[in-house]
Amino acid sequence: MSVKLGPNRYGKAETRLVRVVREGPVHHIKDISVSTSLSGDMEAVHLTGDNAAVLPTDTQKNTAYAFAARHGVGQIETFALLLARHFVESQPSIHHARVEIDEYGWHRAGPHSFVREGGEVRTCVVHHDRDGRGTVVSGLKDLVVLNSTGSEFHGYIVDEYTTLQPTDDRILATAVSAQWRHTGDGPPPETSYQRVRQSLIDAFADTHSLSLQQTLYAMGERALKAAPEICEIRLAMPNKHHFPVDLSPFGLDNANEVFYAADRPYGLIEGGVLREDAPDAGFAWE
Image 1 (cartoon, helix red, strand yellow):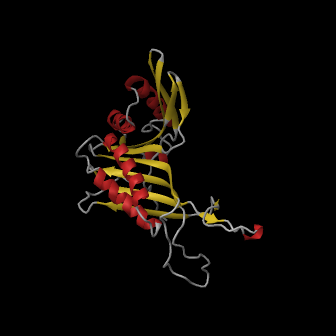
Image 2 (cartoon, rainbow, N blue to C red):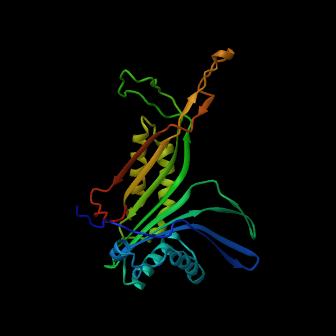
Image 3 (cartoon, rainbow, N blue to C red):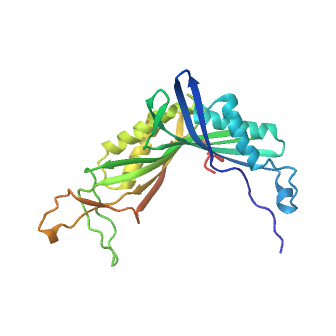
């Protein structure tokens, strides 16, 4: 039997990094998780254990810390690009770098006091290769939204295993994960975040939903209109089910007011919306 090495990469996952900027008594913090992944001339290390082409994952971690000290941590897309370009351009054996960053928000409670925000996590994934090609995908995850009415679900397939009852008034809740791909034209990638985030929230609130799929598409469409510099958005939206509680054993009616919030199992709706003229994604989604 003949075998060969397939696609491969290696790196350091979830390096937690907090950068404090001190302006006299007033401090600013940036709290991020950095994951780096490198690929290139890695045949020898896999086939013979020769590590000559390997930049240790510990070195990748240290580079993130050193760059935070040397360059600061501004917008996460900018910091990710800085790291990705460094790994490719400084090491002949590294042909491609992927850098993923999650950012955790903090709310100021005083000059040097902060409270961790309970909202979404901001994300980005950057690719850069030896040919100078690069992609930037910005995003967010765990953006929890809920409509207490304005949602229906009926007209679906019914077979011998169906027990779900149709409804024309239900709670619709989800935790949005979204990633959007930049074309490379227009404003810097980091400027899209607030516009896309707000457009997702507005579309969720404005759409009278007949299905979570319909709502997903409306949110993606609104985001593309709000940020012309992006060409594609992908969303994953778990349906956080809220079931009316049967209060009849207690002699009470439930006029869609008391619900059981189930955490699992849940429906998971995923989909993408893209411009008809969107360029090829290349390795953006890898």
